[in-house]
Length: 362
Image (cartoon, rainbow, N blue to C red):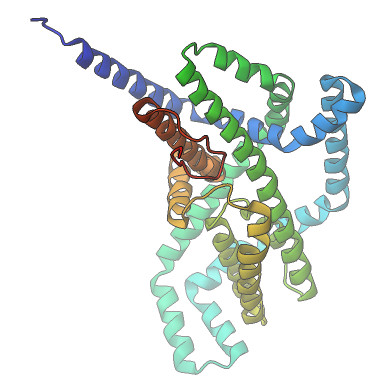
């Protein structure tokens, strides 16, 4: 009898390789995040590059033209809108210490209560509650500041992402062909082809759809708050549009941020603003999003929340933004693996396209 069972040894070796791969992914997650953002950016501009390539007959020239147009668009935007956003952002940052002090001392309860006709007892009770939880509130504000500082530290991605994306735009097809050439067995090759095809469809649709939803929210938030005279409307609208890129959790954080700042600034029509945010959420979730996003992600809200929280713990702000497409990618791999396993057990099945369930051949 052999001292070492070969099957057990293969299982242990596979588990060891899997653990080493997970360890490598965790150690190098910052670098991998940069490459993932580059892939997403490449998916975003690929339709324009492919269309222009038909005219230029050169993919390199098409990429260069699209990049020049994007650069001109960004420069124009920041030339006209950037200074206003920066000015409002600086004013808000300068006002935050005094606003937090009003919250910590409970004085804001007196100010808001007087504006809305609250009784003296209600104002004093709320002021006492805020003052007794001063340390907790300041701790929350400090953690929020640390998150913003983390986001600022990742600004180098704004330069690196387009550079890496240019390589994916130029050589992305050859990368997939090289990967497929490494697999010789037909069943495994079909499995890998299916995964790559579904990932390509999902990512291309998700990036463009989510960016469209974020742009809609940015315009609507900014226009409504500017019309209502909300302080720092441009900054808050821009923040709301950027947070819209995070499904489920992002809009909730945006609403809390907007209403919270308005309360700190003693904005008198904050209830009307809250009603508008609730109404826009319903319009976005039940009218706009289903038409633009469709069923491309097929993630339960609990799964999306888990992915966002886990992404934030693993990779901070970058992990939050990448959590949903990563979760959807894992789901694609799992469904393709189920199809592959069923083929090996019971024979051919009907192929499924992205967004459909696996059904046996009749």
